[in-house]
Image (cartoon, one colour):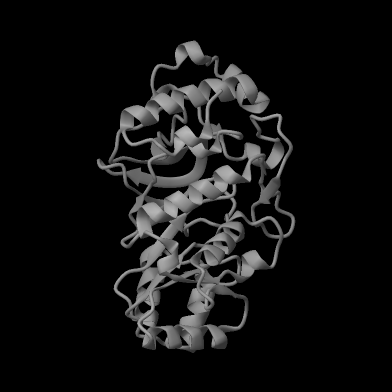
Length: 326
């Protein structure tokens, strides 16, 4: 049996591949949906010698099937956002401690100790519904910061403005994580010149505003907040790990997460770095679900393993927790 604790000890490409191949075998044997998908492709563990051989489950399966590799009781069901009439994704989580470990260690990898920050969350569209994995993560980070000023803001933009200005005067380190349309609303009402605050957008206009390309969005936010860079979070309902960008839209993964691109004309062909293709995500924290997911995002992988989002496949749903399409 694979121990989840081993996932978070990965410190090399070789260790990652070893764990990925073991988890593939485990999920092939224990996830009936993934097993059926692999069978349709005539793929079984004896065929899988390297990461590039592993089949990636199309993310749409989370809308129509229970994608699960465990017999343990469901502790939490995370659901994606969607407009009226859309079918939303369901991620059945049997061990919330793995998710908590993943986002805690992931945050620490890129930003250090969360107790060093006042964490402010401007996520109205997520707070207004049940089942958001982003709200679960933000709530945990707010509590772990142990700062009395940390908290959620719904539509009370004036209160958020006052908090930001007060913290700025006190030279406090702040992380403001927000959905794109709400951050735009904030800087339209109140211009800032912040020197101690990280602005992190999670993407998504949620139908509240016209979609913008990333550069346009970030330029507006940089000017409005008076900061040199806009940070971003790349995550989704179907994953238990996040990648982060500290500017320029270039994302990096924690050691237990890896991104590849697939040929847009041949979904089973993995491309070399530098080519634009569909993003395939390996999230080893997803051990009790499916760790190998073919997303609907288009992107490009760089030689160092970092990646950027370029857009989305045509006719794919606009998704929460995702960056804007071109």
